[in-house]
Length: 138
Image 1: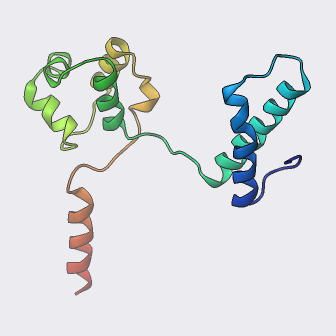
Image 2: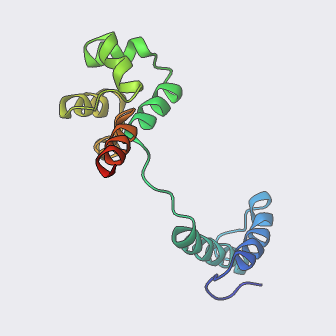
């Protein structure tokens, strides 16, 4: 029984095993079982945030996810952004999102603007940068 902060993967696994039975039979609010469930949840979340953090999603992946969940097509994205070529370049990470695009996606498709503003390298950008650094060193 975990009753202190989780510090190891073994303790994490034990806490997950202990909390699992609560998912099949949710405890009644105000009971000791509900308190135990809340405590385990907090301990597991704390450990996972520290040892298995989930970073922010890539802006283009956020758009693709919204396309899947909202039944949007690339043609819908093209209509929103102004052209098929622009939509294609965005999805292939060949063009960065502009502030205007971010605003439209946020307003029309309900994607949080803060999920779209993170800077990201364009396709092939990292390879070019690494390749030029090797040439300079030679």
